[in-house]
Amino acid sequence: MKRLVAAVALILAVTACGGSDSDAPTTTAASGQATTTTAATTTAPADSSDAPADTTSTTVATPTARAQFAIVEVGLGPLGQVFIQNVGDAPGSLGGHWLCQRPAYHELPEVELQPGDIAQVFVTGHDELFGPRAGVIAVDGIASTGAFNPESGEVGLYNSNDFGSADAIVSYVEWGSGGHGRSDTAVEAGIWTSGGFVATTADSGAILATTTPPTDPAHWFGG
Image (cartoon, helix red, strand yellow):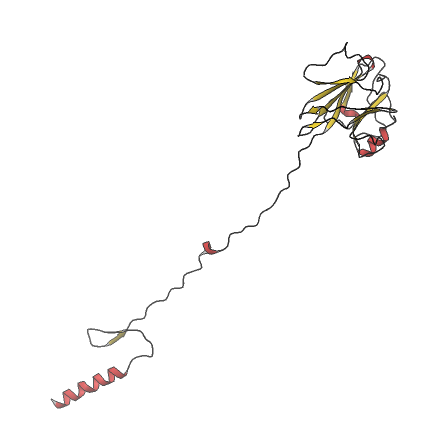
């Protein structure tokens, strides 16, 4: 009996002094053997939602809206008139603009044109006979450009009185023949074709633009 007690005491002493160096808890199985349980460690993947948002953006420049004036019709002979249209995308005034049939010039008054509006300018003094056309804005007075000869002529529109400047001329047309006084300026500005002209005869009553803004003889029809 003493031997059995001593053997049990020896076993208990060995058990108390044994074990691993880890701090994992131990449990005793029903058979009396010691069992070690290790807690599993899980490393969670990085949450992609924590990543900073891509704030890169592309800035697209928006073209500035502006008025743009163009000659779109010229009445010839006794029907001497010029029709000017705002072919831009913003309202603007004809004030400060000039009509030119070299060597004659005429400064236009303040006339506000919305996009698409057309102004009618008389040049022969026959406005009482050929009154304002329906749907257009009639400009008061008679332009001092002189009459437009159906057989040969020109008319240019400028945004200042710097008539030799390609930066100032904004619209131009010549008919009957090429090489009129301001055609070289218009060619330099890129709004006319060198040597080009709209075909007319002595009986022509008008020339009409078929494209806006017209920048080439092919954009016109002679009537």
